[in-house]
Length: 334
Image (cartoon, one colour):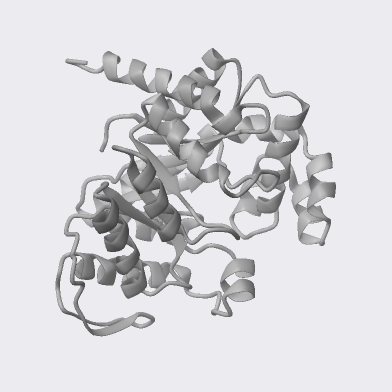
């Protein structure tokens, strides 16, 4: 998967019904997109939702995650991926990440530390489990003894979310793909350079890079409020805050980390910030912005569709699919 591609990402908008996730998946398949990223927020378990989607769709590939390595063991991750693949018959991949202190420690009562080594060890152990081995793994942080997956899935692609130098290094050297969320094209360009350099030093081919990009067709007041309300959640967590500060929004990040309410942050959020990390405008402008991310080094652009004024994100997903079709026809033999 090193040819440019466009896929869909479930947004879990805070102002929309939880069940909208399945409708968005159906809209993604109708639009002709090949794969859907199923992450996890405060609603559905990602594996359960991916299974429900798999039973409602015909051919949609599923990328589960990123799931927090500090919350799920390699065994739990392997069981989730194998369960979805077995029960739906759809191709399944899994993505891992560090998540945030609020989720790992606050929600799950797990320690928020040692993200990079835990990610590396989880990838190593998970790959062996998915390959069908009876695993006896003793790392510094990850330990699994005597487990063998009854329905192995060898060759399952393992992605890793990268924020910060240590996580990016592990992802570039050990994962099958790297994931970024809410970043500018310039940030994509810098991370692509780092990934290529780290992979070369490790003696392996550079892994593909996926970027999640919130998108809206001709957004009005409701769509803008939806986008701002969701982005406000990401202002304070480590990694995201530093990135938004680098884009020139330090004061907003400081307010978030000082305890300002999400509604206050959303109301104060400049549209410029959303434009820097998203794809907004006419269908042609959205497709053009997706092309900018590809040109910056993204292998996959995961479109996070706004639904406040666009039922199930159908219009923006169709625009993304049209852009993806142009990518295919531009290739030799396309």
